[in-house]
Amino acid sequence: MAYSDFTLAELKTRFHLSVDEASNLFADTPEADLPPALAETLARYLPLAVNVNTEKARSELIIAPVLVEFKLLHRDRVSVFSGIEFTVDEAAGLKGRCDYILARNPEQLALTTPVCVLVEAKNENIVAGIPQCLAEMVAAQKFNAQQKLPESTISGAVTTGMLWRFLRLDGTKAAVDVVEYPIQWPRKIFGILTAIALV
Image (cartoon, rainbow, N blue to C red):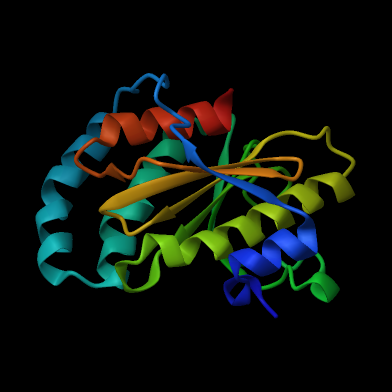
């Protein structure tokens, strides 16, 4: 079993998760200013990503630029990883590659403190990506515990590039945001990433 093989029912049973599906997690989170380079990149790349309309195009033209510019803006506080192997507990099925991981540490040579995992939605189906995202969040939680780090909230996001839906995990209590944020609200998405990774 790998992250993408989990169902919500299996996650609840195996890891004793409860899942709240009715919270507006970031309603009060302020927007954040975009770096000028990101605003320009989105203005230039978004029409192409929409017209090409493939997962690869959206990943390269929207998701990656957002995360790279976030890293560059906060280079002394966060790191971003793409497509890395993240096997934490093979026996429990917590293994496989993660699309993206944000860590609350500037080191890029090795992952040390994952705080947010991001899953690219397959076939533009965000809901179908939620179990995979939750499984990766459980893995991040276990990874931090293995490193003897203080217990903290783990966040996640499932995104098509065009839409972003965020999740939160505190202990065994998971919450899935009721709101999907469109990339046309980039300042809000950047504000949520800021709240997740820097607070």
